[in-house]
Amino acid sequence: MNEQRTTFGSRLGIILATVGSAVGLGNIWRFPYMLGTNGGAAFLLVYIICILLLGFPVMITEFFIGRHTHKNAAGAFQLMAPGTKWSVVGYNGILAAFFISGFYYVIAGWTLEYIFTSATTSLEGKTVMDFSDEFTLFSSGIVRPIICAFLFICTTHYIVSSGVKNGIERASKILMPLLFLILVVLCVRSLTLSGASEGLRFLFQPDFGKINSSAVLSAMGQAFFSLSIGMGCMITYGSYFGQKTNMQSTALQVTLLDTLIALLAGIMIFPAVFHFGIEPTAGPELVFITLPNIFGQLSFSNVWAVIFFILLAVAALTSTISLHEVATAYIHEEYHVSRKKATLCVSLGVSVFCILSSLSFGVLKETTIFGLTFFELLDYVTAKIMLPGGGMLICIYVGNRVDKKILKTELTNQGSIPFYFFRAYCFFIKYIAPIAIGAIFLNELNFFTWIQSLL
Ligand code: TRP
Image (cartoon, rainbow, N blue to C red; front, side):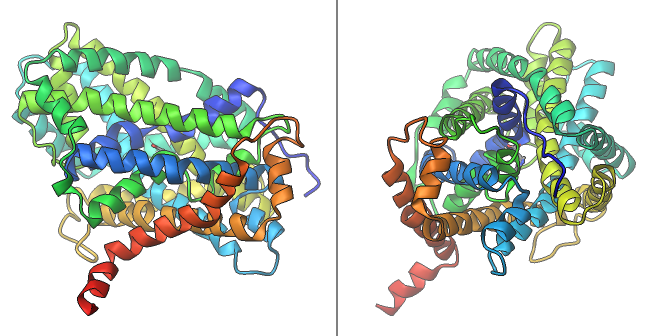
């Protein structure tokens, strides 16, 4: 393409946009619910190991591919390995973007509903049962949740169609630090509830008996999901980095901030879960039932609730923008259609998935594939298979096929910044990450139990 590719405007813009992609519903909605259904502290431990051993190196590797090629996820592999099957990694990513969006917008839509209801009805005097019933009534409905998801798609569509610099960067600069502040306030409120210590024990005192193959797979999937890696999102964002961007420190900052926000979300949710007697295993509704109860304990409960859900919606928005951008950049660049048309294709495609996954909380609840509802299926296939699988292939490709000199030159900005652990990094992406991800897959398929039974 002759057209000059846009880049992010400033250093701060790069960090904010990338953090904006990583921090979202994955941290505040999905992390507590995964932790709750997978036994608590032991899950947290495996999660943190996955973030450090797999997440961080994979993120650097994606940045490398993006900035080295200045291409979208699929175009990058076509450029680096033309005529080979490696492009499959890119296509896997584009498909994952559609699938993830297919359920992500539904949850993002829920945050909008909670903004409206918190602004219009009183939270005081309601019991846990009331909140739970209200949630079920809303989420199992047909029209309201779909309209909410659709509003979210339209907002994302509008921002993405106006281009990288004006859209993504400006949106990311607003309100992210505020989200952090309000999380801290809510953590303090939750920690001062009676019975908070039980929640903290659940979060921080591991019971290794609860660790099984599916908990390990869930923790790995959550790490990939939360960091937005494994599907080319960070390749796409890396392609907008300038030549001076320090990709090592960007990856480190994004990883640490993302993990910090997830931990804060855990500290906000679990003391309250135990205080109010909510089941930690409640699933996707966990956060939506627990939060209104915490707000109910504060004076000006509605004001807190409205502010919080607005900030959560913004965090979700900076993530949906990145998901949308992966598919839009691909269609725009590879099929040579205008950015506006590409954006429209993605929005329309995603809408169809969203309608189905929203209905799977109500009328399509009993319609299952492999025992999973449509929503659960999209979530399972992406977080537990496509993202770690993509991450594994990205590591194998860069670890084995890319000249180490090129890798080092790119990651050190032509030698102008140091990379102290370069050899360790290469070892990680060549051996540790692919083997660990492969082993977790095989373990889930009971491969090792099967081998044991043969011995
Ligand atoms: N990481 C985001 C979150 O935690 C979700 C997300 C945005 C994502 N882009 C992604 C997940 C790309 C996987 C891949 O909410």
